[in-house]
View 1 (cartoon, rainbow, N blue to C red):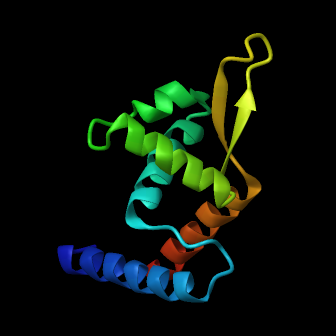
View 2 (view 1 turned 90 degrees about the vertical axis):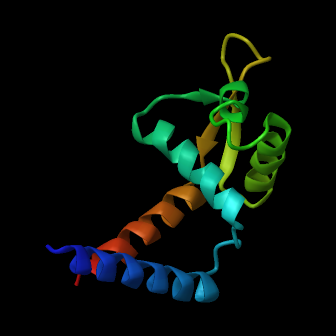
Length: 116
C-alpha cells in the first residue's frame, strides 16, 4: 500500500466513525474520554490489571484530578467498572464493561470496513 492508500483508509475510518457515533446507541464520548478509554485499552489488551491509582497516573498529558474525573464519567456512562481487590478493599481495579467491549468491537469492524 502507498502513503495515499493509507491516508484514504484512515480518512474513511474517521468518516465511518463519525457516522456511527451519530447513529449509535452508545453513550457519546468526548475527545478526552476517548483518549482515556484508549489508554486503558492498552492495559486491558495486554491482560494487565490496572488500579485506579495507576490509571490516574498513566499519562502526564492529563492531570491526575482530571483523569480521576474522567474515570468517573466513563463509569457513569457504563464503559468502565471498578473491581475491589479480593485481599485489600482499599485497592480498586479499573475494568472494561461489556459495553466497552462492544464499543471496541464496533471500532474494529469500522477499521475492517475502511480497508474495503
